[in-house]
Image (cartoon, rainbow, N blue to C red; front, side, top):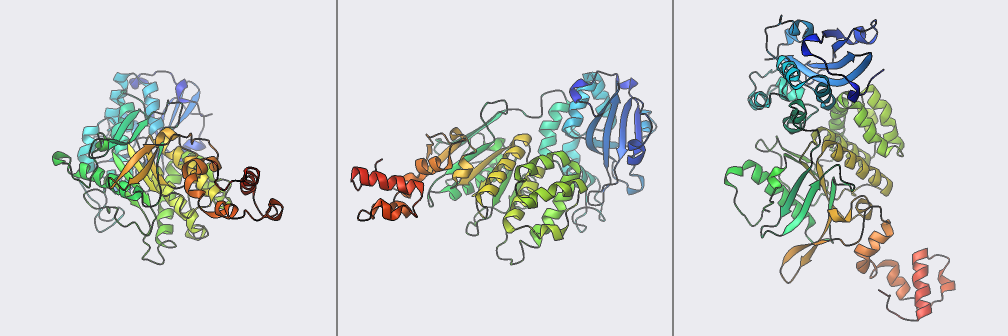
Length: 516
């Protein structure tokens, strides 16, 4: 039986036994003695084999600590299995590095005192504990392997391309490190304010998972031409500018000075509009903290080929290392039979191109986005999504927003939508929403709070309260207004409830102006 981490009792490091086994030996072996079991996985990341599943057996309970990476360094394919029993016994002289996950670090916080935890992490060469070493070897690897890595021409690095294939650099430097050092929890609150260049507030991100209201999702709304996409472009440009030129940052009219904008560790931008081409591209200077997920509309086969290949590649890694979390995310979309099918594929840790190509364009886009977010969102990641409602019908949009919210909340990031959709607003508290309007007198956009409650409000009410003035000048409103010569009886067989109500009001009051 797998026990809960909160139940583990303290142990002395010297008294804890280490075991190195293959999967079948551990799974189908006899009764297990107390200790830590490092179970070798035959999984490779671009050719590197560094993956183990760690189990702990103490006081009659078994604990699954999830996957962790460990390797001799520099990596040597001829010696890619570590005997952890010999490591603890002092029989291995080669340098090793290792890196675990959230549950791994939480467990050792419970199992060991601070003194024993330091002994353990030093022995294991743990990079979440020794962040100074991590920063050094991550940015300047000691050896590149031409036969391994995502691109054989450039060569692969065992730390960057294996240890960090399914976790982010900033997640380790902040979230994992806090736990390993006993300095905090995985999710800590933070506040980031984005201001205009004149100092006035655009939007404030107040992220606190202990808050009663949701704090992970935010939105900018406004009419076409109000400046939503322009604002997003300014935010992206400003953040990248501050990250790459932080030593000589200066005020520029096309940039936004956010009082805390540079406090974000990373940025993920998702935009599929074929008309907005002004977002900055990913390059060598910004690729460590910037991801841009989009579609090349110039390439006819892009959606069916490149996107499908990207989904296949990411799916296997996420399904292997984040199986339970992935299933939990997909649960939000179970009403769709194609996404329901994915649960079985997650269990198999494989999704064939043949299956992927059965998905619609909208379904592919959702899956591509969710996989990217699962791999790239950590604490203080700013996710910007321009018009998430594109290509999606209402139920799929709702499930998509709920899936995004879970990923963002779990990673302790923050997401900003630019949207026209009342379905999106229905999942966001009004305190997290700003309306952008263009002031023609001052020739600039202004940002206004939304006064009506949006979270859990009806879609029709949101539409009426926010967009109502413009809606009443269009569509069936105009039809009813112009039907003064026609009786209700002649219209009621094809008019819906709202139009019928409006007609009754018109007839009862005998006025031409719709009451405000």
